[in-house]
Length: 254
Image (tube, rainbow, N blue to C red; front, side, top):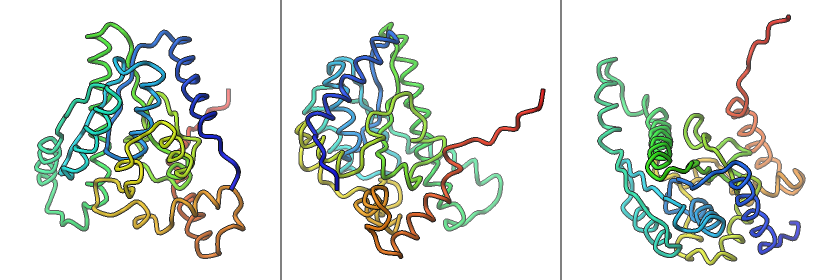
């Protein structure tokens, strides 16, 4: 693996955020705080760049684990930014009740739809709150993305959910690099080294993907660094999710 200077990259990201906000006359940031390392690192970067008074974190439980909310509070307390809790459980349940009017579907039939509905509800909420606080505080709030490079490469995100955001500070960093940045920023170890999971399906990310994030990072560096079985899984995931990145648009000939 290539050498990675966490201090240098961290400072570059902080400057990137500062410059973007200054150039575009922006004020603050709204982001979902899941209790995992990615959102913790992103919140730390924005706190350093904008000041904690301009960062608003949101916990968005939806039939979620209580531990995730506790870990989110740990992060907000550590970095000193405001944390809002917006419970989406009843909203999700109401949606499911309305679905019953279309027919009787079993859990296997709705499982994937249910999993993807949650991040879509969360993203709608974040954008609502961003607009609300932009009005209340009379300065523009952006919604921050928290996806890392490994997740993005294999399409491990929800189209119309966590794929939607206004600024993306860690999208070019692998999971290992995000951890190194988090270590430099002193993200509490309980969160930084927490086993990654989506908080939705009761499975770890790596269980769902069938590969480790470290293997995805190696693959992106040099395909020959992983064995054939791992290579095939990663290639299949990448190809299967290409549609998430581009919207095919017909262009008429003028």
